[in-house]
Image 1 (tube, rainbow, N blue to C red):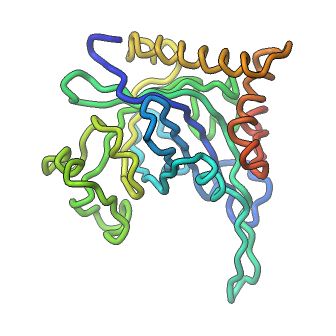
Image 2 (image 1 turned 90 degrees about the vertical axis):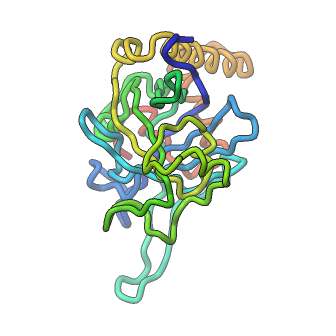
Amino acid sequence: MSRALSVIEEGRIYFFYRPRVAVEHPHSVDDIQRFYIIMSPVSRPKAPHRLLVVGKKRLPEKHERFIGFVEAAADHMDELTAGLGVKEYDTATRGHRVTPAARIAGGGVYDIAAHHGGSSTLLAYKLEAPEQPGEVQEELGIKQEATYVMHVKNPIIPNPPGAGLPPTSKARYSLRQMAEFDGYRWIPVRDPSLLDVPHAEFLLILARAGPRDVEAKLGEIAVHLEQAARDDVEHFKHEHPGEVDRHTLLIEKLKAEIEADQPFIPIEPAVEGKWE
């Protein structure tokens, strides 16, 4: 690993979006109700899968700072994806309402890396499917590779009016976890378990995007991501032998990870990069 950085967590990452009520075929980010990220750690065997919500309904671009929160954490992926299906309800004024199922917009591998001394932490990912970002990914800010400064918020310190989660929806950390904050409002994610707790609030700031920039920022960490993606695909290929091209292999892999558990989640946006 790099002298400046070390990996403190690695795993699988997935991006989802849910269309607005009654919007069956979204055409832009304006038609989206919510943007989700699922993080599935593999380096911490007992760590839960996490469902994250990004407030601005896309990933941040340069000079932007986006706040999000952990909506849920579960031992099994399907416990999270089950909540991404169609939602139906009745209202007194508008009658029966339907919110379409979430769509998957991409999947890949991620690392959380910390500078020695814990002065800052970075979330870096490499997209596997689609191999090249399309229209959907571009609007949602999903790059082929990207790195973000990632901090987590002290739940005891109130948010400004109208910002973040309300006081009644705050992360309930253990005494050990609370000691990590040492009175600060925001701290680096030196302890990844801080993201395992529902209602944990986090901050994302784009650091680098694109293979060359990510490699320049991360050094050997970027190489580690590349190797993790390669090993991930080779492992799936070994378990599912057959003469298929890499693109088909990646799509079948994504189906196996997501659609096998929840067949109601459309994967076309992650396959073709087009709105669905």
